[in-house]
Length: 131
Image 1: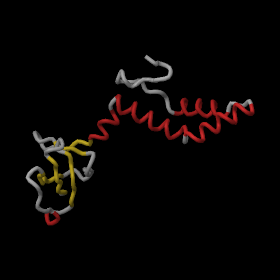
Image 2: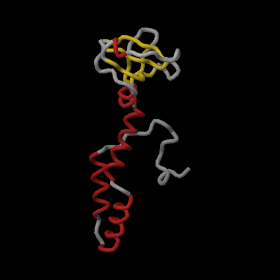
Image 3: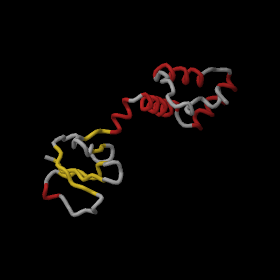
Image 4: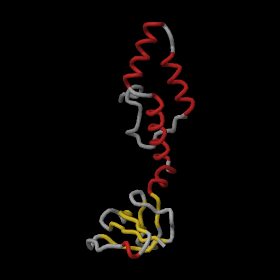
């Protein structure tokens, strides 16, 4: 059974995970050791529910939420678009040569990674929706 160090001041976030009781060490009063039967619990993204002792992967919960899906879509598109310098170079070459390589690339990224509607009204396209 794993032993999990929980930070009570930070929403009961898992701060450390050790495999045996012998690996435990003395900690500040704001930290607590708990036994954990879930072998998938890791430090950082996991929180412990103090009411029932269960552990929740906050990152997985966020990724499954509408906002998490939107965040992942934006991140994946940003990676697929490529560095700004490469984008500007492609736009320049298309303008110079009369080609559509850049637009074709952007269209492919948008079709491969479909748009996820914004949940937050602040999260909008600032160029197309300038208000």
